[in-house]
Image (tube, rainbow, N blue to C red; front, side, top):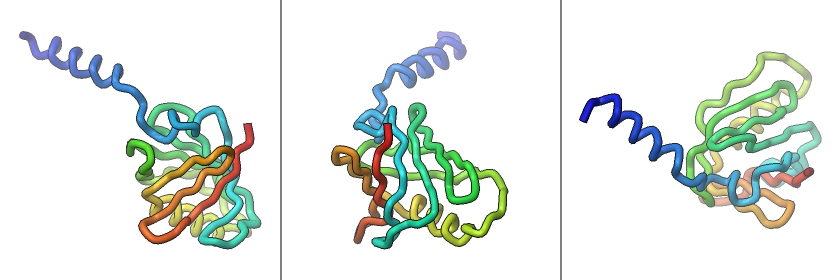
Length: 130
């Protein structure tokens, strides 16, 4: 079998696999707004969205960002975060937000609440806005 046919078959099988990420378990079609970070009320603005398979996007306190999450639900594994490079007074809050996103490895959606946790505790709690 020619190699291009094998490649096309592999690509086709990959595309047909169901989306098992957080997006298909209630994360899609919503914008999630951060309410607490490490157990403390988050006074700046930060959002998280799941616009397409394996993608995340959002607005951190200063910058827009995007990344990948290919982990199946209920896990989450945020890869390297790409963000615009605007400075603002909330840079410290943004740094803490990105660090918590990258540290999270468990995600739970319960109604309009999304909680991202590590092995020990909740790190980020979001509320949905449709």
